[in-house]
Image (cartoon, rainbow, N blue to C red):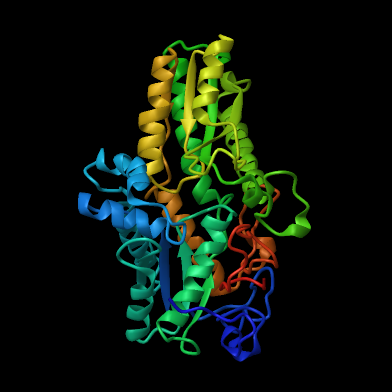
Length: 404
């Protein structure tokens, strides 16, 4: 694999402050308020296996560089094998790509979409080669991840920078990236609708509001990485932007619930975490959703839980296994009723919102005119210095951000 020397002229074509950026983003403004004539979109995602023979090779890709033997990978592989070795994420991305294409066409926006993954076919490098081979040079990337953290933000930007070098396209293409959309109305609307349906359904079935608990779940990450998520100058408390963004969105969802359904105004909620994969000696974000469900049952006041996959764009394996299987089974074991609300997937509001975000960059929409539902937004078009450091690996060159 090729590497990029951060001091090399390769990292700064056009003498820009931002690696491989369009001229409008090259100097590193927080928000790009100039129109850019993008000629193609890159849909970047995580990727997943599509058969039993793919599972271990896929997990080797996910854990590359960590030296994890195959027998340990089998501990995770059984999640995929339970579903025939097929992750739902690639099918979700095919559906999202088709929905985006339809919405772009409806609006008269003639931008082709090239889809590439980090860990499985179709790979991001191949998507970039296809786009360049079709004559596209000014690209706008959209990652299927809404929040600030290393794996959900910076790693995608590093993937894109590496792909430019590995494909020999330095100086031939520019790549900007759509801002993180955690508090964009299109992303949040499906969660509001899901919570309203779940809580409203429980109340209609005579479940007392005082017995309902809403659990907003997201992927746990190492505390050290969470603390470094988002710009350092924001001075956020423990958990950094990753935790702050989730909390802010959850607060908005609950305020919308109370406004639409006054009987639910006092329903308690909590941010919980799932899918921890690190060693026991390393602190990760807590509490775990299963531990919380056990605690609620022991306390005795709760009778039902609404499980909201707030950290997920679509039904990833972590949703289907960790929530639909494990957390749901935990609730059943302790005698609590449970409902898992939908992810945005291809919800019309989400698809429309993503195209709105693309149009922001096409038109150079001023930051003051960009929709956002929390005080943290609108998030940055160009990541600020030091954003989302990987404590173990350090900084690698990344597109759409100021160094390091």
